[in-house]
Length: 209
Image (cartoon, rainbow, N blue to C red):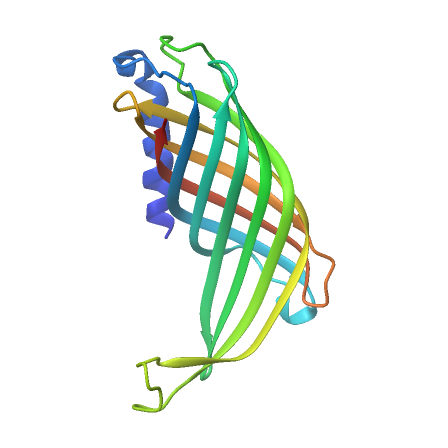
C-alpha cells in the first residue's frame, strides 16, 4: 500500500511539474461533471478502547457530481469513503467510513493557462461509519458460495468535513483524468466511533456534459 501512495504522489508531482507542456487541450469546464475515483487511503479511529487505532491502510473511493458555475467554480455532491479490513483469530473485522458532502471546487487558473488543471476543494455533510464482524463458513454451508457471514454489525452516524487539492488533466473535450489528495474528519460521537480521520489519495476519470 505504501508503494501505491508513493506512485500516486509522484504522479501528482509530475502532472504539476509538466503543466506547461500539458496545456494542449483547454479544459472546457462547463455544464455537469461526473467523476469516479479509486486509490489507497489511511485512517485513524478514536472511540472505545478496542477502536483506538494508529494510522491504518485500506482502499478508498470517491464519487463527485458537480455543476460548473463559470470556468473556475464547481459546486456539487461529494462521496468519499474508505474501508479497513483485517483478520483477528477466526474473525474478519471490517471498518467502513464515509462522508456524503456538499462540496465546492475552485480552479486556480482560467482555461488555457498552464496551471488551469490545479484545484482546491472543500465541503461538509453527513458521515456514516460501520463496524462488522464476520465468521468463516464451513465448505458448502452457504447456498450461494459465501465464505464468511456477518455475526455483528453496527452503524453510527454524525457529521464531517473535508479539504483537498488535485490536478485535472484534459484528455478530450468531455473526458479528463485527475489525481486528488484529501483529508476527511468525521465527528460521530457514538458508542464505537467517536472521531475518524481518513486521507484518500485517488486517481479518477471525469466526464463533462
